Image (cartoon, rainbow, N blue to C red; front, top):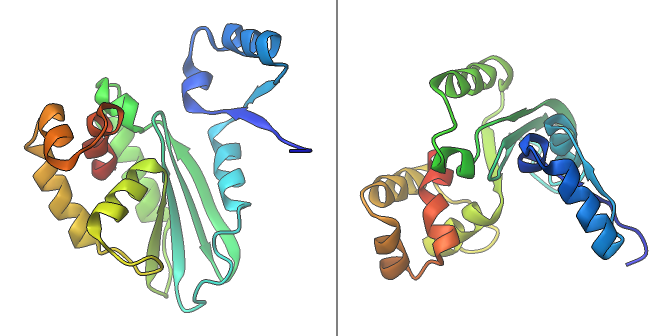
Length: 184
């Protein structure tokens, strides 16, 4: 690796000891971590050019679900039209830190800003959606149906973390947040 950029996102933005952690990492590893805003996080996701090679007959909503936040990036015709970070993440949900107002704000933003004459396709990113995708047995490169996500959410919502770990062979650090990721 010749060039890198170490960035911290939602958890570090909100952590009371974020600066102390950054200092310790720098002291112990030589790596300088930069805390970035949610909007910059969404921009960096967009800069990965996930839209390249996708069918121009659709508009795309890129959804990156993290522990502390969810980033939405909407693009059409190779042009980003909207990006926004919301403080709705799996760890925040796990710790009951997401309010009805947070949900209302995100839903309103989606209704207001995610519009196209073309069909809108959602593209999910992150470890949780990747796990659900692999569990779905959907072939690589093929879309996973939203109805499958709803079905799995309903099924998982009725189970404890221990049941998810046993029945689906999930690690605890995945089983405790997977239902929350599906809710998002």
